[in-house]
Image 1 (cartoon, rainbow, N blue to C red):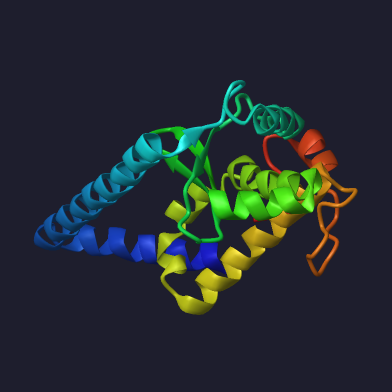
Image 2: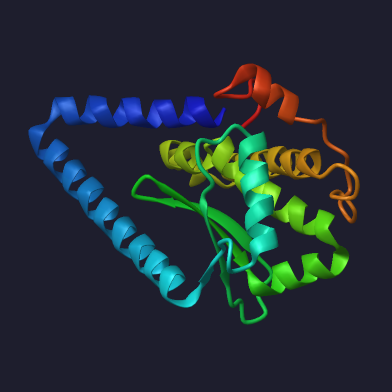
Length: 204
């Protein structure tokens, strides 16, 4: 549904632009303007991340770095995304993002601390979940499906589907205890990734 809606919006925009040069000029201007604003805001966030976060490496959070490399290999990634730990100020969150063809995973310190208290499997789940977003290319798909994301019921439904898919990745990467505290036990997607690379059919 999200794909069909977005394709319909893009088709309407193209048809509108072909009918009127003046309208086309206005639409192109706003597309360029919004793109520049997005790049500026996102670039500032990445700058904040690099300036204030701690880059996970063999010398900084070595266990987390080893876990990320192992997960990336298991998910068939060509390289491990840059992973940062960022002071959260009490915010419980973790996210995956992409900027200028580079992937990033951000683990806020509070959620990392709570996961660490619950054990290695919980940390593995959180990290695997975020890597799942990158492996499934959710960041790129969300950009392409932006018209649908603006519609509340379509956007929320697609987002839930993405989160459930990534929960499945998190559980499959650490199946023994990774799902502790979560209300469902999703199927193992890792075998699907291996057999259908580069995409897993039937999932957001």
